[in-house]
Structures are given as C-alpha cells and as structure tokens.
Length: 284
Image 1 (spheres, rainbow, N blue to C red):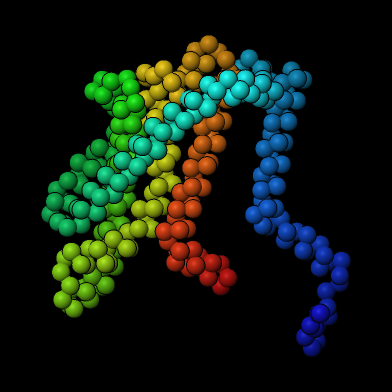
Image 2 (cartoon, rainbow, N blue to C red):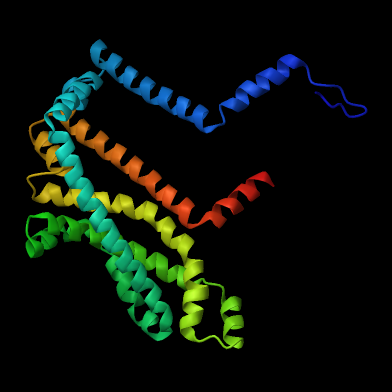
C-alpha cells in the first residue's frame, strides 16, 4: 500500500525498485559479497600479472603457488601446529599484559601524587620501541615459550596501563563528588563510578592489544624459535621461498581478523548499553 501526501506524486515503480536494489548492498551480506569480490579480484589480477610476465613470481610469489604450498602444509599438519603455537603465545601474552596493565592503570587513580610521580617513567617506557627489548627478553627468559609470552606482555601491558589511567582520570568528576557528598568512601567511588566509566576505554584497547600480542609472539619467534608462524616466515624468507612467506602472512591476517571479531563479540556482550546508544544515534 502506497500513501501519497497531498500535493506530492508517488515515485515511479522502476525508481523504487532500483533504490531498493542499491540499498540491499548496505547490509552485512551485501558488504560481505563486495569484500569477497574485491579479494577475489585482487588475487585474480595478481595471478594474471604473474602468468603474463608483468610481475616476477620469484620476487612476489603467485596466488596459485601460495595456494599449493598452503594446501601441502595444511595436509601435513605443519601449518596447523605453527598456527596454534603462535596463537597460544599471543593470547596468553595479551591476557596477562592487558589485565596487569589495566589493573595498574586503575590503581594510579587512588593517589594523584604517585600518578604524577610515575607518569614521566611511563611516558619514557612507552617511547622505547618494544621490539628493541626482544634480545634482552630472550636472554632473560630463554628461547622457549616464556620469552615469546613476555615479549607480548611488554607490548600489551603499557598500552593497557596508559588507556586505563587516562580513562580513570577522565571519569565523571561530578558523579564522584555527588557520591562523596552522600557519604560514599573512596573504595565505593572507585568501584561504582570510576571502574564502570573506564570499561568502554579498556575494552576498546583490546582491539589494539590483540594485534600487539601477535606482534610480540611473531618477533620472538623471529629471533629464536623452532616453531610458530614467525619461525615459518623467517625460515622461508631466508630460502627466498616467497610463496611460503605469504602463507604465513595470510595466516596471521586471518588470525588477527578472527581475534578482532572475538573482541567485538566480547564488547557487545559486556557493554550492551553502548551498542544501544550507537543504534539510537544512527537512527537519529
């Protein structure tokens, strides 16, 4: 049923159908189709360029060779083993570093004096490229699993600390003053006003830290390891096996993609009010 306001003419049926077709692409399924088409087109042009001689397969590899090598490694179980090893290192370092850094950042809210005292040291530590610490971490903790986890912790903890500390400083001062005026002590203000207001910033940091966790694990495997995707990439690059290098890189991309959406699910579950506010703003 079409409702026509006085003084206006109904839209032609053809234009309405075209508008609906265009709008259908602005959905989760439509965007997924366009993204898949872009990926397929990219690899198709890459393979065509290699076969036509426009691109050197020795320097950049080829999609067909990448698929063939990846299939062999997948069937042999080597790719699955290396992927799980790197994933375990990254997740363990991410969890330890994020929890430790967030708790320490929130704890600085309790004392403005201590926070101002240690803030220059936090800035100094954050300014140092954590990758430069990799040889020291390996020297301290050996070449096994612990060194990779600790390197991931060194990358994730400082980010979580700064994010939690800044979020605690930006907590609603009026609400804190109101609670104090009503007789609340410092612990009650912290747990009922400061912590809830910092949760969105802390969980948003998860998206950044999951990538840093992977970086720490892979860099540790570059330096010294017998397993993992970092070891796979490093060994293949030393042998100029670009197809295997791309297998490792694309596996890391897929891993990061999956972990990002896991964090997104955690955010939606932990902060349902944030999602409802976002939907309300879009509708307005």
